[in-house]
Image 1 (tube, rainbow, N blue to C red):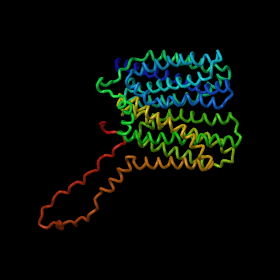
Image 2 (cartoon, rainbow, N blue to C red):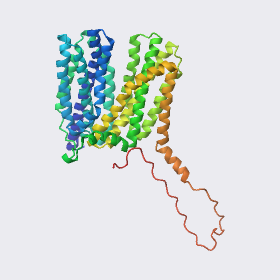
Image 3 (spheres, one colour):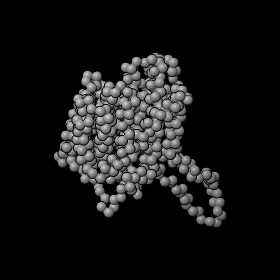
Image 4 (cartoon, one colour):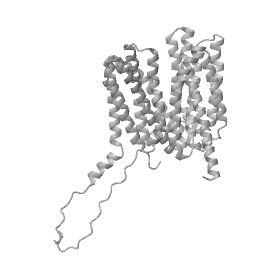
Length: 457
């Protein structure tokens, strides 16, 4: 490797390291303080209704603003978006959470803080995702996606225990932690190079058309559209599985410590899956990888459905195995989709495509929780789990039917010529008196098309 190549490699590795570390700190602080918001509200008011409303104000605004945030990231330097979002987070903690903790200010400030905090975290994560293809060589995108997915699971695995532990020591420590890590993340973003996204000419911009560009890209790209549907549906379904786990733990009298271990298994499985994903994803087409993941999810949920739910010892094995399996498979499908985005989605709309997908998958979470409650009430634990498995299996069958090798095999069988009897040696050709013509080769069917666009229009 030449000196120039080594310098280039060190450059992008340094930039990715800064981007990765800043995202890890941002996610860690967001999860820790996000857990503390409802706890602070409950401590101040002793009302679970107020605590639930405070938690909701942290989720709803960021979900609704996903699309405008994607347009903002596509039109502005992602580095600038990350810097501003982290600076606003520090001001939010000091100016809104601080008065509630120190001056006994109205709890409504916590709701405002949770809303601003969630929007800033979404801006930072979307900008960080959009910046990856600008800073990382194309051949390194799969590894970068896997590292980012591992970071997400590691933050989930450590953020909630950190937030709960800090809150137990002092109610204000999660807010202090978030302010500190947000400030460090801001400093790391300042060290990133400026990114100049491709901007349309002034006369070519149209607000409404630009906002829906993410939806337009999904409609044009069949793989993105199908994975958006699969991701939205499975996100809702796994909220039902989460409710099933809570129900089983309550019915069998499992301690909160054991319940916490079970729920943490998803992060452990996701972290392991993120380490393995670069090797598995790089060896298969995106649609094949998603198909295998759907079958894997169907298998782990079926295992839970067929388990004897009255056997506590068996549940203590199957529950973490199921939930870690969900995370393990989810890491593979996330790395697959993130790699596809970075390689195939035009960079000028990458922010909006990312935000559009997160809008749908995020909106599925409350829908899944509500629908899961009704299903549990109507079908019970086993019936709900079987229903979830059935829907995932249907998605797996659909993806299997459109996976390139199967349609290609069917086309080859349909176009294969019928065998003809060969004339015996020395006999005349069936066409008497006619000169024998060379046999015309049967045309090969076209190569199977992947669900990815072969040429963007």
